[in-house]
Structure formats: C-alpha cells, structure tokens
Image (cartoon, rainbow, N blue to C red; front, top):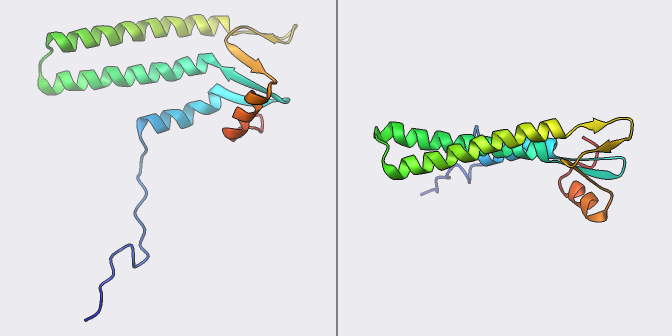
Length: 137
C-alpha cells in the first residue's frame, strides 16, 4: 500500500500569519524613527523611543480594561494596577510633551539638544549596520 503524503511532504507550505505580535509590529514601525545614520554619524531619537513606550503602556491599559470588562468587576488588585498604569501613562505623556518641546534643531549652529544622541564612534556605526539602516533612512 502506498504512503499518503502530508502537506509538508507534498510541498505545501504553512500559510504565513496575517499578523505579527504587537511587540514585533511596534518594533518594526518604531525602529526607523528611533535610529538612523547620516554623513558617517549615527543618531538616536529619544522622543520616538518615548512614543513607542506610550504605545506599550496603552496596550497594557487596554489589556487591564479587557479583563475588567470580561469579568464585570474591578477588585482592589485590579484598581491598584490600573492606578499604577494610568500614573505611568500620564507621566509618560507629560515627558513626551516636554521632550518634543526640547528636541529642537538649531539650524544656525547645526546642533541638536539633548534628546537626539549623535555619535561618530565605531559602536554607533556598528549598531547602524546591524540594524540595516546604514543608508541614511
């Protein structure tokens, strides 16, 4: 009697998932805004990093809300966790606003304020090459 091939043996590949994890989507979308290289120098944008942090906090708050909605109750532990997350979120929002207002380019002096890190050191260039972002984008 002959052997019946399963999908893998028959050359049928697994379908690719239609979505990736939140962490992966956030990392892929945010990395290009956080790090880039230009003119043989590397740049790190802390404002963009803070924006990614806000997205993570939003997801954590939504996860907590989903638990409360599903269980139709909010016990003391849940309330304490929500308070903590809301506090972190509000502080992060204020910090981001401060960062956005502080991270201005001074075109006359060609300098950046403290929220953009700039380096011509080998380690920064190596990081750029490892991220596949060495083209200035």
